[in-house]
Structures are given as C-alpha cells and as structure tokens.
Image 1: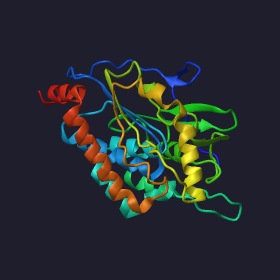
Image 2: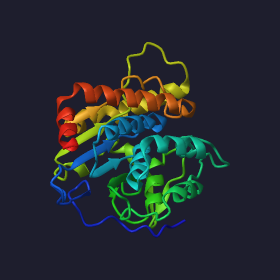
Image 3: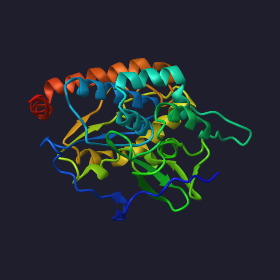
Length: 288
C-alpha cells in the first residue's frame, strides 16, 4: 500500500530537524514546548501529566511525540482534553495500536486502525491541528530518522507506533517506516530553538530488579535499557523533565492498567507543579 502523505517541509541538518522561527506568540506569551516519549501503554501517563499542567493554565505551542507520545500529541492538539483522550482510548480500543498480535506471517498490519484516528480527527491534517505537532518515525530502508510535520496525520501516527518485528512496516511514498523510538524515543530536538521553555514527559524509568519473571519482561526491559541509553543527553535539552518512577513495573502492553497509569502521571504532574520553581513561574505568568 502506498500513501499519498506529503514529505515534511524543508528540512535541514543531518537529523532532518524541521526549523521554524517561533519565539513569542501574538499576545506576548512565552512559547512552551512539550516532548512526549514513547513507551507503549506507559505513555498513558503523558495524559495524566498533561491534564495536571493544563488544569493549572499551562498552554503548549508545539508538541513533539513518538509512538504513544505521538497519539497523545495529535489528539491533544486537535482540542481534546487529556482525560477525554483516556476515555476515547478506553471506549475504542485505541490501545490496539500498541498491542502485539500475530497473523499468518507472524506480523500484524495496523493500517485498519486509521479509521479510529479519522473518527476523532476527521480533517486528518497536521496543518489543521490547533497546536503544532512533530512526529518522528524511522525510515527502515535508509536507516534514518524523519520528522513528520505536515500531510496526512493518521499514517504518520501509525508509522511512529509501528514496532518492528511485531507490526508490518508502514509504507509511505514507497518507503518503509517503523517506530520512531528506535532512533529517538524522546524527540526534543524539533523544540530546541523554537520554544522559550521545554517540558519533557518521560515514561520509561526503570527500577532496580533482582529477578525477571517472564520472557516478555526480559525483552521489554532489554529494549527499554537500549532505548534509554541516550536519554540523559536528550533530557538535558529540556528545562523541566517530569518522569514518574512508578511505571517501570508496567509492561508496554499492560493495557488493563491504563487508568492506573493515567493517575500515576497525574499525581506526578501535580508533584512537579508543587515542587518545581520553573513550573511555578510559568503558571504565575500564564495566570496574568
């Protein structure tokens, strides 16, 4: 299947980072960027964190998210409140995007889930979202990261969520694309230089363990260790990082725990608002 998705706008740099000039918006407010990591169902914690932040008046000018973070970014940018997105996910089994299943050739196509995205974002366009969104995916054939910023939204989300070895690669303009988290699970770079303040939401904190209970847990933990290897350098590009420490015990496919994970994120967001001086300053400015 070949999509008609347009390639991103003019790109620059080895990492294909889309450059913009956005410092201050029309009413003089600071541009606040939000970066959302991948992490399977653990990414539902992003919704809890976003709900806590928006409840206190924080508004985002640009959101960059990979995999589960791409889903949260797109639906939020369409205008849905984070708690509404959680309900949409629960009502429509949107988490099937992140759940492995095996067909006759050992891989599942997730293309049919486009209808779920189109149901709630019918215009299916980056340009018509209320907030700027960047979604990374990996061009498998060329072994490089691509940031999608325009064109068809649904196919970009699916590409960013496409776990290799589980889902068939998503074909866009005759190129194979898979999960953006393979090369960048915390895509902060598109926000750097384009926002006055960057908030990061990361959902892959790993606790110390002494035993591994199953093969699935082994694979999940090994993958997270590999993905997290470059995380600290990405965190350093953020002004504020919110990272719940209670998520390491959840697997990326623990779909039944979505409500619990949301609340963990919400509580962590409230804790950051209470204890982080930079967040206090931002909230005070937003209330003026």
